[in-house]
Image (cartoon, rainbow, N blue to C red; front, side):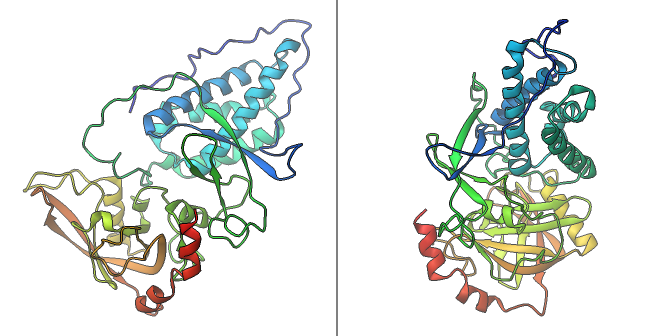
Length: 397
């Protein structure tokens, strides 16, 4: 992570507060807008980069812009700057959508990116923030406070980023985040519309790569619940981002989602960790996060948040939703994985833990999970999910 940068020390230009200037009356454009050429709706989305360093860098720029807008909207501003402030608030609206759909808040993001300060400024009535934007900021601020800014939550991280190996430093982008305008699918779109396998997600093809993003204009289910959470056994998802929209799994990239205090809500069993995990179907031996990396044969690596969550699951006995993730290569030795996508296979409980050695000779902790009785047999789920139609539809993406 980069060193802390105080967003209050903004490089954004201040707007002079002069007597006789026009009173500020700002509006924020609806993120879902109509285009003149096409009656289909569009959605403004942010491209904040790929790595966490890039995202933190761009978040700081966004929070500085918010501070500039709120600091100069208290009283009066020059008429020629009203449009600039409207644009800043419109960008803030898209930024809050991005925080809501793309970010698992952590104490580091809260402080390093200045998110708390920006949200507090948006909800301050003295700052004359557009009512809808201030309301959105309050909802987000209340949510983060209730969750203690993710203090107890397992952070969502790419397994590669979570590795102890030191990545090569990459130059940070000189320009601010790009606001892309993506077209929303029709409600009857067979893939992205209601009932389609990608419902709740939109494809952003405006850049060099295709990105899937959770739609901020649709209600989504929170994954931060124990039990089935309304998810039917055998439910299938094309990608992990789809599980996040439907509340099946609580991380876009990470394999463990949950609380270090009360336990994991859900885990993903994948071929990536076959050298560490053993899947017998109703019994799973599952490793904690970053178990590949340790080289010490006498001592396990410091417990990650994911490992702490599994330890808490053992203590609380809260059930864990287990999803299995397949792959196109089909080279996995695990016969319980789906051919592609992710399948929800029901509730398991951590019953014990033990120590094992990884390929580097390092000690790691492994947890034994047992499937709860009274659920549809795994063999039946494997036969019925995914369907031929689902596999075909995913292949067309």
